[in-house]
Image (tube, rainbow, N blue to C red; front, side, top):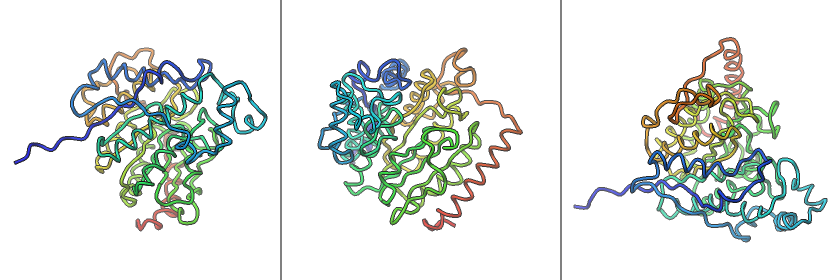
Length: 382
């Protein structure tokens, strides 16, 4: 008789180079969040054990980047980094407040993007069942456009890698901002389904991602957007997930998931207006894992640094198969803006405000009903 079946590893993507370099300190996008997250999970023993490991990212090559991005755009990034910011490059989104030019930017971004490609290949090779690249999640970048702190789109590159290997991919984006770059890349395809829960474009960048954006051609029904009102809390968010997202996940039956775990949907984030606790992210990850498919998770937004890094540490523990009970409930977290946090990874539940919450719930129910009416029949869901 053979021994017990070996559990595939859960892999944390990290390189000291990603922690030492990165975005300028004046930019709200703090690229040191991955290193901070690693310190938390290391201090809690969450990287210990034979079923979890750390793996360095392999830098994306120029040829790999050109599978999505245009050569002219990549040349513009390299040229801008060297001090030549042309009007054409500026029109591509380079040199703006959101996408500043900084030393070493091409090498840093290609390494961060390479982390998601590395994760996809670890899954394809059978070495890992779950991979977390907190340095990834650049979901706004287009073929020849930088936007929203995103220069190269690692999510698109990883999804293309998996799809090229014959895998059906489901990208689930929990970031507060709509994944316009990913949506655009796969809008007419049915081998990559894109589902995004995000703050409505009526109140937040990039102003896209409404429920009538459902794909075109053979991709019709394979783009799903759930725009949420400012102030949305855990209960309403999970209601939308259970009534729309989970049925579509089961109907699509992907071979692999890509999750964007942006933590800017948490309460007190300075750049968004949702009011979640990190328990929502943890609960959704657990529901995804129950479908027993490989998971490639990325970071994304998250501009309250302490809340973001704790949220990612909690996400890592869930990806590793923990139920979160060892990550004791904190006394503060997002509830107290972290000023009185007394340990643990999980947030306390936020209090409800009945009138506002009822209004938000009514609006979300209407959005979900419209999606169910337009998209569910395309997948045979009754």
